[in-house]
Length: 259
Image 1 (tube, rainbow, N blue to C red):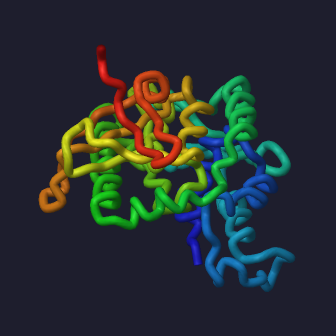
Image 2 (image 1 turned 30 degrees about the horizontal axis):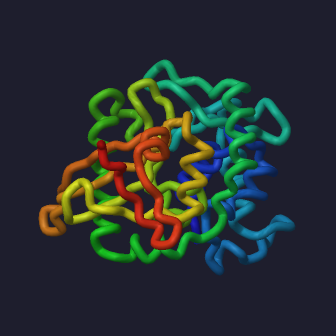
């Protein structure tokens, strides 16, 4: 059974994708980012819905203030019916809901990239020890980075692939120094930086869709499984699509050689 705290963590990536949703929409879409267990699917004794949907409603019901900013990275406004959940921007005392323009842009992009197909190649990669450890290394790296400019925002660094596999097309959600979302796909190797990595059609489509929206590959290389440390090359979506070659047969990605 997922707790309200775990549900809040899952709501955040939904809002990274859609920008703003009301309570009814959250209930409809939560399974895009969270796999329900048997307890979640049990029928509520007091409401005509399953238990996990009731717990979504409880987040709103248990909120005493009309508006509240949650540490996971969104604001709930009870002045509307149903209540609205909106992604936030900024850091520290300058946090605010994202603009209507950003909300509209996110919803448009959500139609271009659904991300609901399970990427089995990526799943196999993650199941390997080095893939798992590489993602954990980047999560800690991002938390330490955010800690340096806003300790109160550390909880906005989320390991999404642990929540729902590849439901959003990237592994980690973080923020930059202005509080803007960073969408991070991790590719880890124990070898040197130019070792080929692998990217499915689904992952490539994600980077095409979010080419101007803070999407990055974090290429973790020279990774030591014993120390759980390595080096990181940050590759923007634009650089990835312009400067790397995608093999359509093997799905290997290699950097173009300079003439």
